[in-house]
Length: 413
Image 1: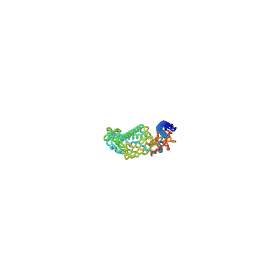
Image 2: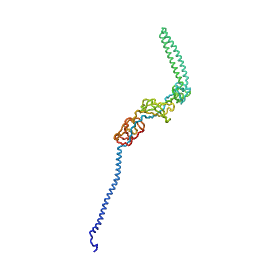
Image 3: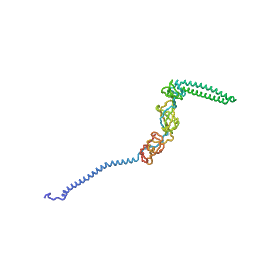
Image 4: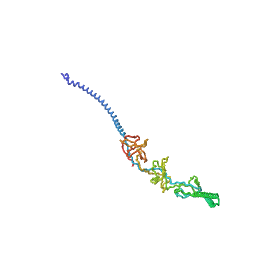
């Protein structure tokens, strides 16, 4: 009997049957694993995709939260009010004019016999500028003097006659009526004499105008006559195109400058205020001057105060008609606080500043502006020296808004 004919042993049968079963189970296990891996992989992919989308959103949300928190307290810069300067320089334009300015006209009619002063000549008061020849006026004066002599003789005779009649009246030698007639005649002759004397005085005065003289010390700036020119009393010279004046004289050793001071600064200007002038012709040079007088009234059109300034010009450096800049030092006895203009808010209810109040919140204060220093202004009322004023506040800033101080600006020195 061979081995193949023997029946299989139980162990061998079990191994023979177990082999296919193990392979099937393994296959089943592999299938189950594959089925599990796919959902896990899909879940992992989904989780990765979600992570890629959610994480940036989380970061953005965190950043947004931080930004909202930061914006909840607006960062601001503060400035502290300081005392404004007691003196402020006011710069105004001025026109230089002569201290005295006169047009010289003829007071008598005639021909110019000679002139003595040309343009640019410095003359003294009473100096002869020209001679006017008036033969007709001289003849009239001679006739008036003759009439005066006649009237004087008539009055002398009438007066002596009246006195004799007054003496005879005392002895009743003449009547009262005849005496009164002689006295009346004497008085009439006296009146005629006085009239003749007045006429002589008038003509003498006119003859004196044959010499045209300077009314004050100055410089001749215009000469409109020449020898032989016919001039008329108070009229125009006989030369074509000439104006009515014979000469024009200006006093230049002392000059006047007129300026218009704004209404806000008018109260700081008074007679005797010291100042100085500058001109383009003399860079760096200062001409000392003094406020001589003012109009003491505000011009309703320009809202300015007319002020006259006198300056000594004996060296002749300044010329009449020139442009000058007037530097006025305005003094204030009690200067207020000042702030930069960047701290001001212009609201419908007035000029406002934002200060930091309790718990770092905004408090708006209405202020009154005083003097203007350009980039800084004087705050007359509304702020205290201890206030922390917000510099460059936003237009939308409001009361109670929370802020955060990031820096404090330093005022100008």
